[in-house]
Length: 148
Figure (tube, rainbow, N blue to C red):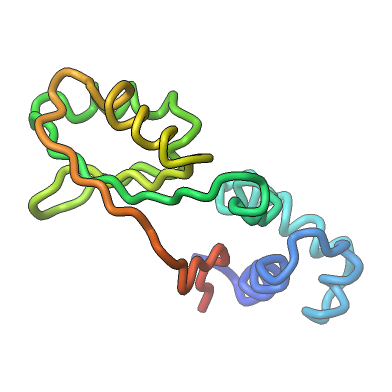
């Protein structure tokens, strides 16, 4: 369970992780040392896992965004996913319930790169079926975590 101070610190860093500890301390009403100590504690607990820039994929050449559903032989789900994690085009892999076993969130530089990925990299034993959804528009893609 998070303390009120930890929540305030996370909310502040969620707005901009590049803020100085001094700036965060001013916002949350505590000392810079208290912010530093709490951030280190949150990192040690694995709650704060890293600090990453929010990059617009399209502006760095990744213009094809696809959501790919996989149906995988159930006894081989972990084996297939261990192969999938090596592909840098895959931004996220989710085990899900329902008709599909796994959802991939992927970025590609071109339609040809997506096509090659589907035909070559996803031609993995135990992948029984693939469904691909090309994303036309991203309406919301929130990177911040809801902290209440």
